[in-house]
Image (tube, rainbow, N blue to C red; front, side):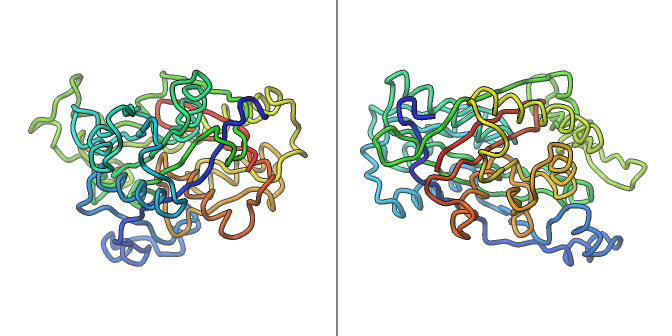
Length: 338
């Protein structure tokens, strides 16, 4: 666990001001109740980026991190930005954020496109680049405005997702804890179950892709909108996450009892409860915080870490297992010592 002493030195976030409550959604839909939505999702409200771009949210989260932890911006060697909703097809949004932050020109910046597993993959990238002597301080940013791609009439996804950005400093300068070994995996056969079908080269947007369709549950969407096959995603999670948990413990030479906290991607309460019971994680060690935030894709794990630390559930010296899983299908897990 102490290889190269590479760890997380700080995390900060940016949350959009707009809040959409279950009551508001019920008013719009004319069906369900706030209690039913909460029972199914564990979410009572979600933050929505009405106008903010990913670059703007990433900038605000990064500025909060630099200020809260007194980090000189000239010490940042590399900016990694995880997003699925970039400002442009090109250039990389990371380059735009790099300029907004006024980082030095000798520091690198690039995007990587991942969803719910993105934070764990980002930590793996940051650790590898530091271990390879390409950087000492890496700014890892997660930011998405996925709700902008959700159809207003799609009850199945509007009740779940929110927007947010986070910024994490990963360093080997002796001020941080330690990031352990990783396990990562991919099953691209499930790519179609979490997808925005149009907008890329495979299917450019057109009048046809903007045509509205209503499914048997009354949810409305077009091919320009985000689509999630909930039952298939649940089955994927129950199939792969328990294996990832077992493998990451083995790779780090640890057992379940060594863990102080388990922080999984905050998908929905229903899914996480299924996973907790399947894996056998004690309820007191299993952290959930999606109630006031919703599922913010790659930002859920760092947001949970921030809140867990504020509440005292995560303290110096503790070992926390981080597990991300979703779009791709992709998944990743690691163990961090705080």
